[in-house]
Structures are given as structure tokens and as C-alpha cells.
Image (cartoon, rainbow, N blue to C red; front, side, top):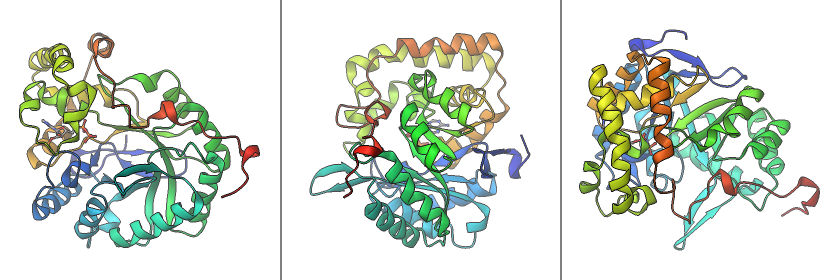
Length: 343
Ligand code: ATR
């Protein structure tokens, strides 16, 4: 691991030359899904603090807000664009009360142009398809992203919530630099196929929700503080019966963290950091003190025995990661290219 600013190291993400901070910053909660948007000046200060501390890999999406999170980043990055690695995403749209996932070329192009404007940058470092459009062969989607690379509008291509076979097909069209997936002490379903496939193909792994959307940090007490605008209120793992059961997972993390003299968040993040130097967790936070704490996770060392003890926790989780309306890698197979008749 190369050293970076503020003690936060640097790592190669994927095999195409992208270098990022070993821990990133998930920006979603600053503008969307986790309660009301947070005050813009505070969030800009937080982003500046992160970058000064060496957390330079910033993660957003056009659907966060929608659009307001990218606009926030656009403002925050004035004068510091060259100091960050900027990742954003397309594919999920919400219009007329309806969610839709799209991966057709015209849509990708219009999303990319719009994100560049909102972010007020010439180029996006890492552009992910946020969810796979199961109506469009993945080769068609990646083909358009490849053109955007050739035109200099994006530098690297990523996928999020894609199955192993979709990743393989995509990578054959143009190298995929990173796959973003949920990976944490209570979400380990990607370990069976997706992570080994990424490793075989030299694709970097970006772990989102490494703190279990805050549950692994704070346990059941966080439920009482969720506003009605908070998407977690409607997610299976955060429903009362499941919370009561999942509390045990938090208690185990808390007990080990107390013994080790770190916080539960730091232990949960350290577990992800220990998965390999090809893995970059991107914890989301809206608070400087939590960001500092999360950076502290890089100093937490776990023994093989502690790793093994923590590895059993996910078996006990009750409730799916998402409700039935949200697509995951399990719904990410696309039609064969040979069946494609065009748009
Ligand atoms: P996501 O990827 O969906 O953002 P996550 O990174 O697993 O999910 O967790 C984000 C949640 O953890 C946020 O609710 C965040 O709350 P704050 O915005 O109040 O920080 C919470 N969180 C992040 N770091 C934390 C820490 N060190 N201690 C307690 N909660 C933390």
C-alpha cells in the first residue's frame, strides 16, 4: 500500500491505472435516502476535510437527490478537482412515480453529459452502471461506455450490483476497472461468485454499505432516530422483528470492539479492509467526527482468529438487503447479444 496524505494510503483499483485512497467516501446520505438533505455548507466542509485527510475517492450517483448530490459535489470540488478521484453512476431513473433501470446507448450518453454539467468537470474518473438493465445486452451498454472513454468524457468503467456472468461479458467488451457491491459483516453474498470473478479478471472491488447502513455502527438504537424520509425504515433488516434478532450481530461486534479498544464502526470497517488490497470500502457519513473515526479503522489490526469469529456473524442475519422492488445482482442477467434487434 502506497502512503497518501494524512496517513490514508493509496491503492490501485483495477488493472487500468486508476489509483484511489484506500478508503473512499460515500456521499449519498448528504443529499438523499437517509433523512432530509443535510446543510450544504456543512457537507462542503466535510468533503474538504475528507480530501485534506487523504480520503480522496468520492462516490455519488445521478439518482442521489436525484441530481442534488452531484450538484453538491460540483460545488465542493471547485479548486480541488485534481486532488480527487470522482466516481458517479447512471442507470436508475425516477420519473412519474416510477423507478426504471436503463442501459441503452442514448440514455447513457445523455446521463453522462448531464452529470458532467452538474459536477462541472471535463471528465468523470470512474463511471458506473448503477444497476443492470435486464432488457439490453450488457455488450451494448459497455459498447457505449467504451465510446465515452475514447471521447475522454470518462476515464474508467464500473458496474454495480452485477452478477459474475454479467461482469465477465462486460469485461470482454472493454476492461471493467471496478465493481461496486455491498460487502460487510452482515452482507457476504458476493463472496461466492462475484468477488472471485473480479479477482480473476483483475477488477477492483468497491464495498458499499460497509457499516450495514449504520446498523453495524450503532445497533438497534439507530432505528429510533430514523425520520420518515429515511429509506432504511422500509428495508427488511430494519423492520422491528428483524432488528430484535439482528441486534445480536451488533452486540458481538460491540463486545469485540470494546476488548480491542476501538469502536464498532472501526471493527466493521477493519474487517472489510482486511479482505485484501484490491478492496476499497466507501463508508457514507455526514459528520466529520465519524469520518475521522472511520479513517482510524485503518490502524485496527485483526488476527486470523478474530477474522474467523467475525466471519460467522453474517450467517445470523435476518431480512434481505433490500425490499422486493429493488434490483440486485440476482436480477442482472441480460439478453444474449445475438438476440439484440436494436432499439
Ligand atoms: P451507505 O453506503 O448506504 O452510506 P454505510 O456506509 O454502511 O452505508 O453506513 C452509513 C451510515 O453509517 C450513515 O447513517 C452514517 O451516519 P452519519 O451520517 O451520521 O455518520 C453512519 N456512520 C458512518 N460512520 C459512522 C461512525 N463512525 N459511527 C457511527 N455511525 C456512522
